[in-house]
Image (cartoon, rainbow, N blue to C red; front, side, top):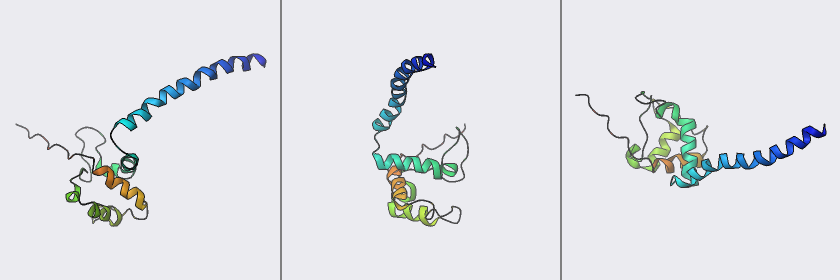
Length: 123
């Protein structure tokens, strides 16, 4: 039994710093993408709650809803909040699913998203 413990201690001593180094670039990239904490939360909530309809799963795939950007709803934050909260004829309301801070975070994130480039027309 002693031998197993003696072997485990050096392994753990090496594994913990390696795990920290493995996770560190993820944290660093989140800090360097230019988003504040609210916008980062908005990106995460949008991906989890809105992505199924508004984000392309793969290149050239169609989505159910329009792509979202800072130009969505004319860039009007109150209109975007209303659409997310109350829904539209084609989109469900999220007021009972998302909290006000989560909706505000989505709006803050969308302000950072440039509009998608127009698709090239085939020749």
